[in-house]
Image 1 (cartoon, rainbow, N blue to C red):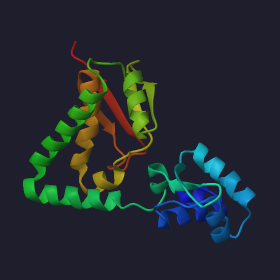
Image 2: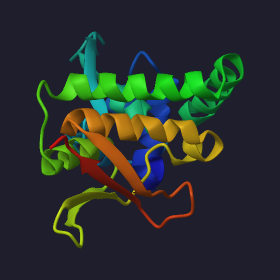
Image 3: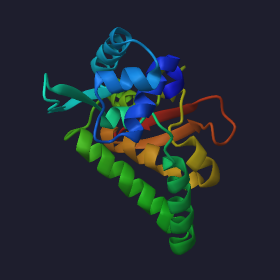
Image 4: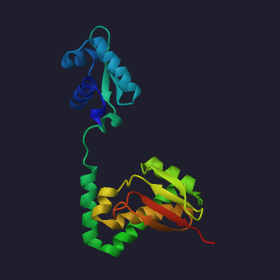
Length: 204
């Protein structure tokens, strides 16, 4: 989010947001009321973080001016309402198809996600790697019986699952398909748990 950046960098990105065609160093310096040197330093840092990119050069009659643009990654720092859209979509689907069909849909989505990640069954450690790439903050722990257990500290669909618990079926299908077994949902944040805990049961 923009809040993680300094005030000048926030202002610089906002200026580029309002000028889709790009801005030169001189234009940015004038609008932000800072020196050209300061603009260059901030642009170098923002380019390094892939928040700003170089566009075309603009002829001036003298030396062409380099224009700078807001990158797609930079645009993502500004507010988006993905959560609102997801809420509306899941709510509408739930009304249209009902509980059982929504459960089936979530399971299908989890299975499709898994198929796009691995072609064969994998270990709990590998499952956790995939989960962490999505933001689950998951770990593998040993159960009292010595069997591995997956513990997720962040429910990436928590807001949706709170309103529509059927969404949890996506997680179960994802883990089960990757691990080649059925999944016990031992603890769930949506149901008041501190974490989400999963035990993968593979066929003997």
